[in-house]
Image 1 (spheres, rainbow, N blue to C red):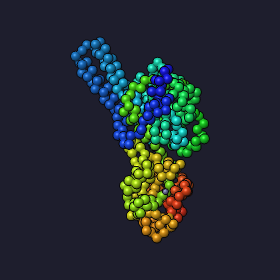
Image 2 (cartoon, rainbow, N blue to C red):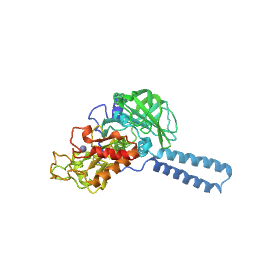
Image 3 (cartoon, rainbow, N blue to C red):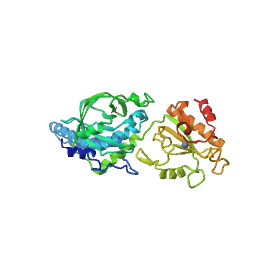
Image 4 (cartoon, helix red, strand yellow):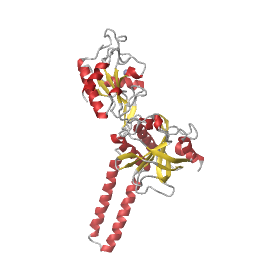
Length: 407
Ligand SMILES: [Zn+2]
């Protein structure tokens, strides 16, 4: 296989030869597979009805020939109408929307390249199962997607197949044109094993199949071959890259971290609303792309002095409030509860109000119940980082004791 062709396919061989696909600031992703599937069904149904109407006027042998032609025609239209990149994007989007399909952070964080082989009526050609490969440039950036084929044992012909390549040598192997995959282990799911330590991932790759809407781990082995052709546009490539970024930012919360807002630099006062925090965090570069939308606020919730709770980023979107703990939900309480930084209250509340604490207890109970969060996974920011947040006046022990009281 020509080196240049592969270089073009993966954009990696010559650093800087092809720029990495930047994450678009705001991407409106079309609704995923379910819409596309629906369109396919409508097309099939429409064509069939036309055939039935014609059948009334035509002799039976002719009808059978015509019927067969109609069905062949609609099948071909359905499978070729959706480009492979778009089908792969649909697979990722559909998986991300279902919590039971959540993939542990340990897998997502270690992934070097992701291979997606969407199911279709015409999935196997002579060279193998066609799919899409993308390798990571950094946390929020992926190289241009390339076409690949998979040849080997696989669990089901009817299912979408996803392979997460965890070994740092994977991008290089793909650049060279092929990757041996002697044994990809069945990938774990959050709902089965809520915490997966990186050391537990001993395999170079983990694989999943998606049959219907359900994702499950699957073992497979074979060979991945990089294809020189990229039958998609630059725009489609960018959109797929954004879908990847979004997919890898999805979490299932495993804990809660409590913060105080402190003051917004330059304003000297604690923020009065989520939008104020959002504006400030926008300047700090805490932005994240989740479910196709960009968020700036680093927390998931803000609790205001009157007990009102404002939503920050969605719960299933990775936080940016405590490095290393961003699968924990971030809840910020408006105020500056440090006796050093806000001794006499010149910056705002020195202690949380009763209403704030009541609302916070209820919110923590709800989230704990919803995500099965253990009590010891409710922490202060200062428990995981060198910071005073949420301040020595924050009644953390009381909070935990109250959250523990109701299961
Ligand atoms: Zn904090």
